[in-house]
Image (cartoon, rainbow over the protein chains, first blue to last red):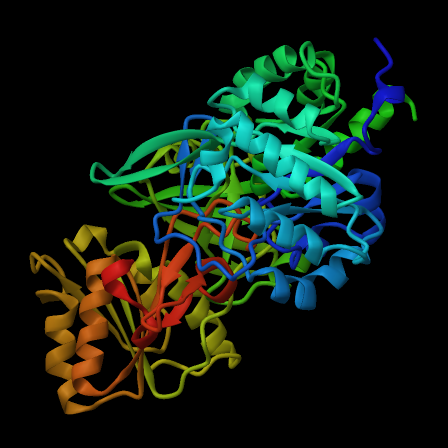
Length: 282
Length: 256
């Protein structure tokens, strides 16, 4: 088997995806500090905005065949509260912390990036792909020129790693190239797919679809993008086994994020990391 | 998630099953009445997430759930045989509140969690409820009525069709009986319309009502923030973090 180990963006090459582990409160119920380090190279926080966000009304989440659909609405305590209450604990993990940022305007992202200067945070993941908010989010992902401007402006104030989490829909390639040309260090491919379910024959839930159902779709995107852009790609979509991780590496990813699988069984990532280590004999 | 052996999977009523699991004494020691466990009985991704079930009873190293077949997950579960294995999460959610001078109200399979509560109450680790009102559409749907009869707490059976116990809705019986002697509190679990009706009645009679709610649960650990319960103060609570039992007066039933 081809040795991908020299090309990892970080090690272990597994990250915990934004919005799938809350703000870290219960992570240590399932992982010892040593296990967190052995399993994840990066922890990406829940999307953080300038002001607190209460999130969307129920229903927020439902199951689809081999997947989940969610519309959480970026519920978060806001950047001040996050820094005061949650960040210190997360930084103690000794794993690189990336903060997922959500803004409605470019200025919001810049202001957020400035909030994390000198805090010990390793990187930022710009969320331009949330399908569940009225402003910002996925609206950015349809405008490559705006994304270019956004990354350029954040880059001016942020010296650490800068990732952009793409939407899997819209002009994905153009957006990826816009990220590359404006100073992003990596792109995360990709967020959830806009979808809809009718719950119990009456309630409509519009949200983002995740889980094993979307893996072939996102894998294809990673494959295509890796041939067009030279910055590293972090694969994210439906990973639930070591084989899934390897598939993403075969298709050009330099690291991966695990999300929905963590909701099914928080300990699954531990098993995946162990299996990968054994495979690579490292 | 840990693998445990099924020791029993028996039909108790139409569409309602009792499953016994050998989880070990260390596990049962950690369980409290009102908590739930997530179970996964399939290797595939469809269904995807483990399903949550209230702990119905505990005996030595055994844990029991009482469940109604409602969707993909429970259809899988009901076909499992003793000797086969399922995956189980640690016990999740919060215990029932310790109430004084209270009665229990259950609608249908909402009775499940009260088995464990009664067991613990008889052991002395929970206050004994004054009475247990147990309602269902028909007599045959009053699953485990005999089990509930074994406790010292008086059991009132109620059916909509009058085929067993008193005829009517649970709130009809409560209205009649609670006027005579008002308890300090009601702990209720069952379908949402029943919970709303009990909450309303409690408000009218000045009795504090606690309701056990349910939502679709993806993680049960506060990771996904999906199991949101709207509160009257405009904020949200998460069922897995602060529930599943809530003071009814705090719940915004209209937005639920």
